[in-house]
Length: 240
Image 1 (cartoon, rainbow, N blue to C red):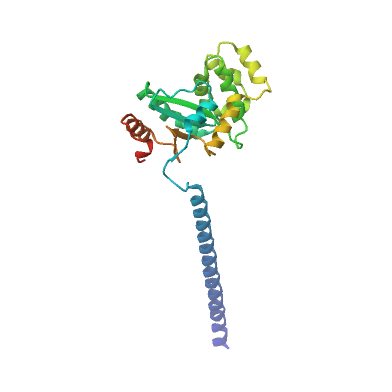
Image 2: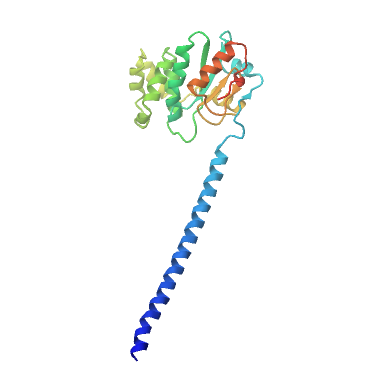
């Protein structure tokens, strides 16, 4: 009897240990499977987000498109940079540092054209674009862009008049009337049309002398592109 009593707990402990071991192994298998599944799913997302081509693509008749979109478009400046912007896009705001560096470096060789492309996921982007255009009517377009990009966190307050004041818009009464108008803004409409013609769906997107880049060139890349164009080469000849 003593032997049976002594061996019974041992047998129970052995069975319990086996059950725990099996449970642990099953948990590891399930967890591993979930991790693998997640990694495969994430990799599919990452691969779908990467452009099919990392090389710039040329847009046929790009000058004609720009002339039709913007009255008075001229091409006497050798480097024509077109930037599609969404004023609520945080990356657009950060990218302005590179754009400003480029223009400061090449003040007479680079012409920059901003094109509005308010994206659907940004609820205040179109209102901000309207504010920029209303300021532009009084000659303060780029000054307004600066303050709008710097104040994206305040867009929900819709204090467009404060942005205009900071940008030095001289007639705030006229500005406020412009902001409150329900009339469509021609340059916003034109920007969307140009984006469709150029097959552009994201911001910021950069087009240089008709070459559309799959991702915005860095400051160093922009510098090499400009130097290449000034040397008579294509923007596409410069690798990132």
